[in-house]
Image (tube, rainbow over all chains, first blue to last red; front, side, top):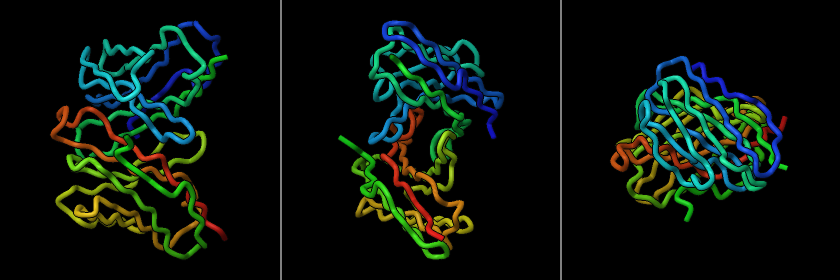
Length: 113
Length: 116
């Protein structure tokens, strides 16, 4: 295992409040990703990072921002949570791109009420 | 437009028989294909991958077949076991776009149910 820890595991928040999800890895992997999983949609990429301070947008980045100030931490922020952001969020890492499998965290279940 | 498609939301197979999960893709730039398995309340776990220069890759009970001309891949599980009951995701990446760093594209998943 890549030693990926996501926190919190569960969170309920109110519409309009900011929320930050954390992904922490202990394997020194260069590449980190945030995905969301929703029924009928599979896994969709929100943002990714290819190094410290190097990030880019994925398929469903609207309403989300990320930061990576250290190799081991990748933060996902919902600036003003909406009900459409109720989802399960997964962090993933990989040391190399191409055919190498990503290692996923256990997920954060976020509910926006 | 969905670039990776898993058209069967669910599949039921008897224990001991072969399970065949299918996946189609539309982006001809994809050059790596992966299968992930996911249990409820857990993150997906990597199962097996295949490069576009191959047409078959085998790992124990799991074999992935790639038909590039048809833009189709399949995962075969033989023999199927109760622990194989899970959601299976097909994923693809293109190493020559964004340097391949821009993530995997996933299908919607197929829920495999192994009947005793």
